[in-house]
Image (cartoon, rainbow over the protein chains, first blue to last red):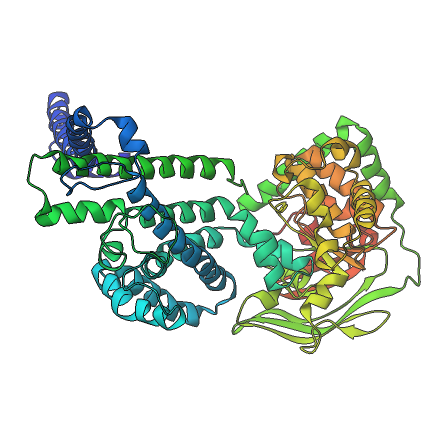
Amino acid sequence: MRETNSGAAALMSQPPLTVSDRLARKALRNFKERVIELLLLGAASVSVLTTVGIIWVLVSESFNFFSNVSIWSFLTDTMWTPLFAEPRYGILPLLAGTLTTSMVALVVAIPLGTTIAIYLSEFARPAVREVVKPFLELLGGIPTIVYGYFALMVVIPLLQLLIPDLSGFNMLGAGIVMGIAIIPYVSSLAEDAMRAVPMSMREGSYAMGATKLQTAFRVIFPAALSGILSAYILGISRAVGETMIVAVAAGMQPNFTVNPLEPAQTISAYIVQVALGDLPHGSIGYQSIFAAGLSLMLMTLALNLVGHVVRRRFREAY
Amino acid sequence: MVSSVTMRMSNQGAAEAASQGGSAADQGVGDAFSGVRPDKGVAVKASVENFSFYYGDFKALKSISMPVHEKRVTALIGPSGCGKSTLLRTFNRMHDLYPGNRYEGTIRLHPDNTNLLDPAVDPIEVRMRIGMVFQKPNPFPKSIYENVAYGLRIRGERNRSVIDDRVKEALRGAALWSEVEHRLHDPATALSGGQQQRLCIARCLATEPEVLLFDEPTSALDPIATASIEELVHELRDKVTILIVTHNMQQAARVSDYTAYMYLGELMEFGETNQIFVNPKRKETEDYITGRFG
């Protein structure tokens, strides 16, 4: 900074600058810096204001909803029937759908994502890595609606060959495909965490006579544990919030069950359904999507907090 | 050039300041210097024969031949980039971890005359016989106990009491036992730098290696911790053959029985440490040791 300033001053100083000239330049510089700072602050506040705005809309609309439906029945009722003549608003069926599809997705994504990460970080030759990584990124870039139809047209028919009386919409097929869709998030973050483990740690292990496998599982994996757990938690957040795959392939019927073979509706899929225009604007049913959205947001917020604690708890100083 | 000379001078100053402190550790180091008188006819543990090393096309080491005497300390000294660490890392085939490296010639480990560089020899087998302590302490992200037990576990040892005994023995051998006895299950990263380095030594000792390699083991440590590592090296000399790379010539003089002076990938002079430091045969060695060049 000082270098460039003195360089600029040297260029300008053919007629030597008076003190007041310099001060004037300084004032101008201060003004420019202030403007730039404000522009940067403005850019940063876009995300903050958006978040605050969303929370405000969710909370205020939910407030209207909860003045008609008690929080107690919202949390404990096992029926979600907003379209019935006598509507009931119990979040549990939607919650069960969300958690079941997420669980199936994680059973797919965590083992596969971790294996891919270990392979890419510790075993793959650079040439192989250069080929595999773009494909993984491509997997992450496929629109989820495409995944949804992949589940409906390919995966579920295949599952029906194995399980003959499986319904055409079910949480198993949707969950499996959702798992495939979040593999890239889990694997790339977990791989980053493992590659960030310093080479000296690997050398230390190899110097003890360890094999690649022993080094990967006994030294690198524990050393990267905090980052790997963060990757899992991000994966869970994505699964909980995932919408199109479950809307297309899991069915649209709220169903209070944790059996993945059955069709069910998730919180996000319910919001999509309302957005399609089944409920009149301003009705209690319409307001219910804000309560549902708030529940979803609180879940992901809780997951983010858990992730934060986990990162601190398992961080290794090396 | 000038700055590296002044750096060496200040190292020297620090080392002297430490030895004038007169702690028990320093006494031991002082004894080491005067006590090293290699007897004639010491067995040779490893022999380097016409060894050359290439990083890609670059010939980093040029036809080196030297013995490594059994249960003695051999120091590798020389200016930065002379290839002393490269030579050290050849002994446990560390270079195999990176592509594009090539060995030429042989390093034979006695008494079985295994050529460590033979492609048919599994580098894992080599590393099971030859331990290494690195420049920067690199304990694993595990407990103190598990760090020392690591070598045993990867060798398939499952007997709990055997592991307990060996861990205790290794920590004693590395002069760390009394400091960690009551917190064996604390994370190793909670230890100080000097303790971490002794833990890394204990980690090696637990598997009873035939040769221990030290790659500038004290360059990241303060003078007190340095003195305790030096004392430890001197004690270990009775049990294991030691090769040590060091930038610090006072250290080489204090801990080693034999010294190899290397320059630009060549072995300039090899001999008993006293002879190298008191009466070097080559002018270049003398210039380096006296700090006229570096």
